[in-house]
Structures are given as structure tokens and as C-alpha cells.
Image (cartoon, helix red, strand yellow):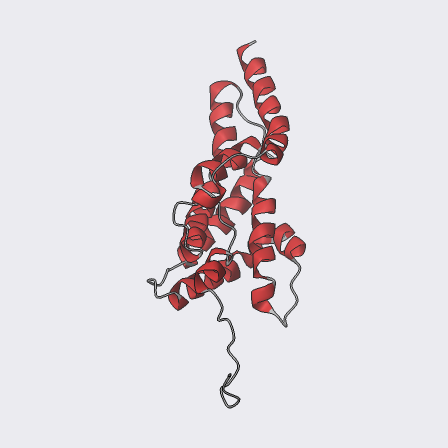
Length: 186
């Protein structure tokens, strides 16, 4: 017979599954591939997914992941702070995120301005195009690496494969890269 005076037993939260869902996880190879083939538009999706994963953790405060994605330069530091705090709550070393966040914000602003300038033409223009697209990806990949660690998946293996939807998003950018390369060599 059950003990009437015993308190009810409740299932405790699984901290490992909570850690895994804390932030959007992806491998760095997949991150760079999507960032490059979408001409950096992937950053909007990336920020949306990061903030969408934070909705339940930030209750009762209601956040709009789409707005935080569109205005990402204003929310980069707060996202990095959340990642750092979550890592510390898991007993991992603190992450000094300020420099990385500022690097992303400043590179995004500078490359946005540089993209409006006519290039010199030829191979140098290709180099400038590549640098303009990929320069902000480096600090953002460092942030992704920290988010992966905070989620308990250091290498991002749980989201390393390219899905059909990824291919669909990459196809227009890949075609545009092919057309640009064809125009360069013709």
C-alpha cells in the first residue's frame, strides 16, 4: 500500500535536453556554406532561429525573433550575453564576448557600406565581393561555436547535414555565383 504521507513524485527536468535546445545548433561547415551561397542572407535566418530558441527561456517577457533578426546589429550583444550566461550556468568557463560581438556589428556595417561602392573590376572585384560577403561570417561563426558549446554539441553534429530545404535556399545563390564566374571568364 502507498504511503499517504509521502509527497508526490515528479519527474525532474532533463538538464541535458534543456542544454541541447538552449540555442540553435549547426556545424561550422554548414554555417559557412549557407552563409556564402546565400550571399550572407543566412544571417537573418540564423538570428531568427537563435532568438526563437530563447522565447521560452525569456518568459514572461515576450520577444519577436523576426524583429531581432531584422535589426540584428542591435541585438548581437544581448544574444552573446545570453550564450555566455548559459555557458556559466552549465559550469563552463566564461566567454568574453564583447570583442566578437563588436567585430560582427562593425564588419556588418562596414561591408554594407562597401557593397554600395563600384569595384575596380577584374579579379580585384572578385576578391572584394568575397571579402564583403565573408568578413562578417567569421565573428558570427565564433558566436555559433559558443552557442554550440552552450547547447552541449561542441561540433554541431546534430545539425551538420544539408537538408532539402537547405539546398532549396542555396540553389539561387549557387546559380548566381555560377553566372558571376561565367561573366568573369567570358
